[in-house]
Length: 442
Picture 1 (spheres, rainbow, N blue to C red):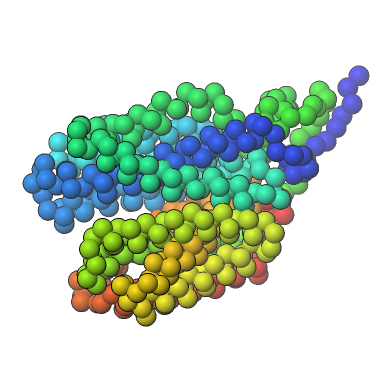
Picture 2: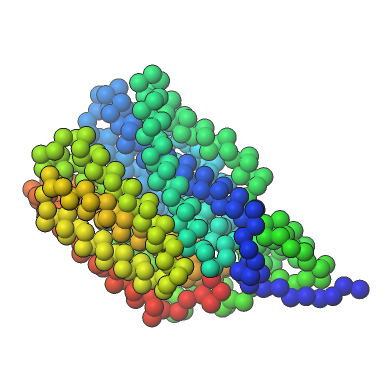
């Protein structure tokens, strides 16, 4: 005779220590995010070689550069509803396969049109990978340390972006830009069999989609340890979600305020970050410094962001998460104003760049850790992916706005100073989430 037992999966994960398999899952997700970062940054290093080989100008090559960000936005918007329906793992594995294969195929491009199309398709995979990774990992992390560990995973993106620079520097002189693209796609493709073997489906997703109890038990035992009787029933103590389109649920009365606040915050944050990181080298060079100095100063922004992500994640686990993020955005606005009011040759300029990156990128990564807790399992992937997708349009807007302001004759101080406005809007919006309901079982 078997004894019937009811087990809340969320409480089970929260009440136990992190197992070795959970740490392994964190490492695998870190690796996926790192290869994602490599492919997002890769075209910036290849642009000189491609434009020279094909004899095209920067304006024409801008079509190629904008193709992947557009794909990233659309990929993020598409993946969430599919992930909530078919599973986190299936969509994550599909995303890795897509950006790997299309990155390799990009190496065989013969012109701007074919390369733009292939980079767009690569972007679809890249845009789908990030929210899938975030959602899957968040559903296996205990809430007491989730923000810190998700922030640690996202530092893989910065690491990948940096490593591709070193890789490009080593490969380009001897093998050319096509080889760099092939290597960039081959690395995640080679890892894909290990991901398929080692990465589990989300136990929370299995519960919500009413999978058999024995499958849920095997998955939860594999990742979190423990043992379950044959009669165990698994459940999630979560608020009900209206059936139908997941995106419609995000804008239902229960989640509308939260959703809009997240969208506005993430959009504004990425607008600031992409305009700063994308145009800061040009602005510094125009201020009279050599390009080498400009590149080094811009690298400080990325370095500060990596440390800031870990700091913001840590304090989100200790204090009220949205207040920590808002404080970081306000700090970003302050250091942006200091950047604008100072001179690029000032000894404090590098410090301001470092601290602006610490605050802005730290807050933005904090948003990635904050969003999964705002929605129940049934629509969590959609909530996360749509925040990321809407935010991608902020990054596109930031890159475009920087070029537009420079073409209109705006000076260094004016372009930088105006960014304090969206940074403060982001801070205000994330504070607004305290008035919106949250998923009780995040």
